[in-house]
Amino acid sequence: MRLSRATAPIRARSRMDRLSRLIGIESATVGVIVTVPLRLHPLVRPHPTVRARWLCRLTPDELAVWRTGALDAAAAAAGLVGWIVPVGVNGTGALIGPASPGEGPLPSAPLLQLQAPLTPMAERELVTQLRGWWRHRRALHLFGRPLLVLQGCDRLSHAVFGLQRLRHAAANLLVLRGEPGGAADALEHGFDGQVQWLSQPGPERPFPYLQHLKAAHHRMDTGGGVWLPAVQAVTTPMEPCFKGASAEAYREWLAQASAWSLLRHDGSPDAPVWIESWSGHQRWSPVGPPDPAAVSPSLTREDPEFRGWGECRAEHLAVLVHGFYLDRLEALLAGLPAAGNQEGLSELDLYLSTPLDQLDEVEELLQDLGLPRVRLYGVANRGRDIAPFLLQLLPAALERGHTAFVKLHTKHSPHLDHGEDWGRHLTNALLAVDVIDTLQARLEVEPDLGLLAPPGTLLPTSVELHSNWPHLLTMRQRSEFSGQWLLQQRFIAGSMFAGRVQALRPLLDLGLHLQDFETETGQVDGTLAHAIERWISFVVLWQGFRLEALPGSAQAVPRFGYGWIRDND
Image (cartoon, rainbow, N blue to C red; front, side, top):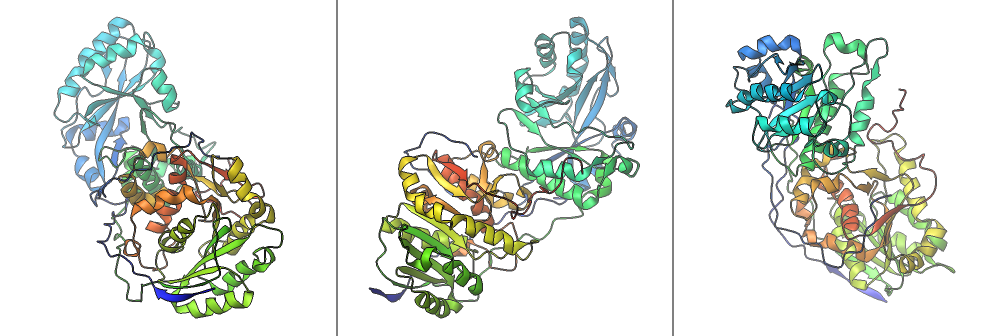
C-alpha cells in the first residue's frame, strides 16, 4: 500500500528567548515507575543577563589596599561582586586582621582562620568581635543570609557546641566549611555547606592545571546544602606551580563553574563561584561577553513533506532515522538486518526524515533497497536530528503504538578527531543483531528499562555545561526538575539510543516548534538541539525508568570534558 503525498502544517508560535552567554563583564538512578504525567509549567524566561555571583578571596598582601576601597572599581569591571577576606583568630578569640568590611562599595565576608585551639570563653569573645562585621551595611549576604567561611574547624572547643556558639554572631548566619571535605560531610558536622577545596601546589611538584578542568566537567552533585565551586586564577609568580595553566583554560573553568552553580541553584542571582586570587583573575579575566546566538528566521522552505508505503504495525520495531548525509544514510540503511527483510528477526518499520532538497533522492534509495514499510518526511535543515525526531518521527511512532524503537542519525562530527569512527560506533552498537532481536522481549520482562545507550556514552550532565546551560536552565524552569537533581544525572551523548517508545511521550509536552530551534550556522554545541540531547535522558529518568549502557568497547567515544587527561598528566 502506498500513501499519498501530503504537506503537513506546522504550528506557529513566538520564538523562545535565548539567554546570553555566561562569560563576560556582565548507570543512572533507578526508581519506582511514576504513573502521573510529567507536568510542565508555563515558560519562564530568565533575564538575559543572568550570571553567577563571583566572590574573590583576597591574599594577606592585598588587605591593606582593599581596606581603602582602591580595588573595588577594577574588581567590579572584572565581574566580581564581593570579597572573601582572610581573618586570623588567635587562641584568645581575638581577630588578627580586619574586623569589618572595607571602604569600597563591594560587600565582603570573613574567612576565619583559626590558628590555635579555642576555649568556650574564647569563642564567645570571637562572637562579640564578629557582630560588628554583620551589622555593617557592606557585609556580604548569600541567599539572604550573612556569610561566614571557617578554616581550622578542628580547633573549635567542641565540634557541635563550638559551631553553635559562632552562630550567635548574627541571625540566620550561613556558615560554610573552607577546608578539605565534601558537602555531605560538612552537613553532618553542622555546617550549611562547603567551599570546594583547591590544594596549593609548589614548584617542586607542579599540578596539571587541566585536571581541574576535567574535574569541573565531570562533577556530579551530591545533594544537600550550599556548595561553592572554586576556580584557581594563576598569577605570574604562581606559574611554576601549575602545568598547562593559561588564560583560555582559566576562562573555560570559570565558565564551567559558573554554569554548574547557576543550574544547581535554579538560576538564582546568588549562585556563587569562589575565585582564588584577585591578581590572577585580574590578569586573566574575560574581556567581554560574546554576542548571544539568536533564533533567527530561515529563508528556506520549512513545511515538511510526507511520503510513505507499507503498513506499519505496533508490534514491529520502529527504526527512527534522520538522514542528513546521503552517503552515510545509504551505508546505515544497508546495515539494517537483511536490508529490511528481517529474516528471523523482529520486523522493522522505518521512520525517516531528510532535508527537503534531497527528498526525491532518498525516496529512490529506499525503493532500491526494497524496504517494505517506510514513513518518509522531507524537513527543513533546522534543529539537527532533534527537531525532526520530536516533531515528526516520535509522534508518528507513538501514534502507531510501537513498543520499542531505535533512534539513529547520519552522524559526521567533522569538528571532532575521528568523528566518523564515533558515528559508526553508535550505529553499530544499536544495530547489533542481539540488541534488535531481544529489545522487545527485554522491555516486557524489565518494566524499569527505559533506554539503551551505546558503550561509553553515559556522561554526567556537567560535561560541557558551560556551552549548554542557558537552554537547560530555561527548560528546567518549565519542568518539575530541580537543578540539583539534574546535576546528579547522566545523559546519553551522541543522540542515538534504543528503548521504550512510551518513555519518551512526555517530550511532546515540551510544546516545541521548528521556529524554536536555531538556524544552522555550523554550531558544534550550545543549541536547543544539544540541550534536548540531554533532556531526553532526564525525562526518562524522572519517570523512574533507567538508562543502561550496552557492553562493549568505548574506544571510539570522544573524551568529552577533558576525559583524555590522565591523573598523572
